[in-house]
Image (cartoon, rainbow, N blue to C red; front, side, top):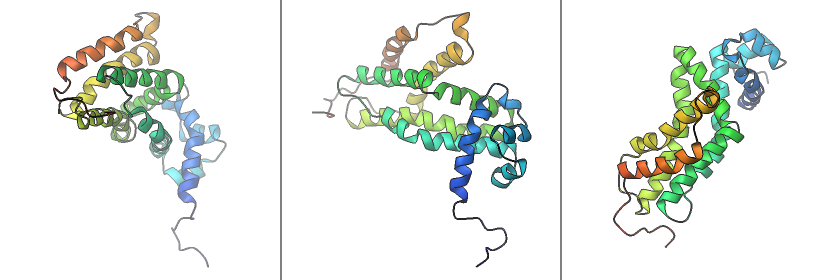
Length: 216
């Protein structure tokens, strides 16, 4: 039986996601923010017509790459938001060190920086970056803090504000040092920053006075 005009194959979404993953390297490459649809097609060894079929236009390609990053990173985000046993301060410091490791060793920094560049370069891509890349990242911190609150270890607070406070300075430092190569002109010791920042965070968002329940 013939497909209805305008309908999609059953594997359309799977094929679209696979193609977005193939396009990721070209999108993140140096100069990728200025790459044309034709250049992206050549880099992915496909045609402009195929890209238009799956993504409509260049911004659609970038959105699909962001979505692929979100899907592929979800299990790691969940793992990062799991508290570690022990004092609250240690759990928060471990979380931030995990962020540094993911940023520097597992490609998170390159993904975030390149997609931020796209979000800043085109007004239509700004909300896509926020929704698909930045918010899931920040919500990892929210999930961690919510678990500490539920366990009676952290005083109740606005977890969205708290997550911004916890992650904001570290992300800025990583962009400064790595993505913008600030380490070459204004180096910063991130190993020293993490514990100092955790102390500052706990001064603003103090531990709960009740006896902690998690792990007891």
